[in-house]
Image 1 (cartoon, rainbow, N blue to C red):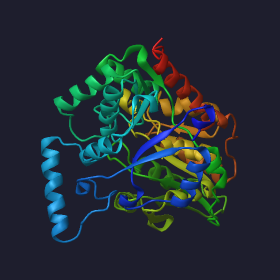
Image 2 (image 1 turned 60 degrees about the vertical axis):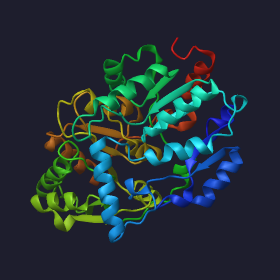
Image 3 (image 1 turned 30 degrees about the horizontal axis):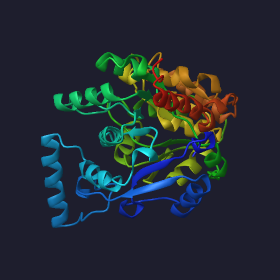
Length: 397
């Protein structure tokens, strides 16, 4: 949307919304796309059973058994779960000609989009840019090592691209160390949509609410240190008399429930399960404090230090203070420091977190400042420069 305001004619290649299990605000999105002049090329998607949580498929009874078998086979053969999209997308883009395209931007994950970008670039004779929202073969939350064939595929795609964007400096260093990307690499952080954030209605909790939305990836991303801090705060810092609760929105309720039981906090934990993005944003905006965890390890490797989850920017965008648990020197800490809203702790600093919680309950919170630096209206200016450089051949100058 923001690229169109800088003069770009944008066409998005995407699966048809009808094949997704869950979509939000379809009509509103369509109105916005039409208003901004953004075109869509809608595609089909085969092998939906490989992505049953996101795509509609027969997932009951024998269908679930058959789909599970397909997923096991695909995993054993190193087949991308989104393999069913590439041919459908190829077919849907078959009418595109050289005069229709100046540059191709592919965002991952899923990284099958990178393959499509190269195919289109080769056919149309146009440059392509790879946008990493997450690492591919170097993802810190992946279980096990990546296949050599996948590593080689990533290397080939990087070699042929005109430019690469990635969300944090540490991930950029890690990618360069692995694949010698060099001057083609540019850091374009995550951010927030100011129009979307302004439309969010704050949920009224009627008490001091600490909120976490999203997933956990134990042992590195776990709720344990925060609940330990809550326990200490409960024992030593609740003299303000103000009621407070910890609210979790997401699919990993068992993890939170087990840790709450471990720390004796069951009566102060509220589990909401999977909710819409709109409801999650409403909770963050209405919260006294948003909790964000990248890694609970004090000393993280580059891949851990480079995690700068979009959840931080959602909280910044709605003006909610953030308690961030991240390794020393993490990009999440240094990148967001200027906003004033983010207070960072390493996972072992239980006393520091408990003290900060006491301040929050008493109404003593950080002041919001410089948050507009992470508005997409500003971030997109750097992406615009990268894309124009890719067209002119100066993206890595």
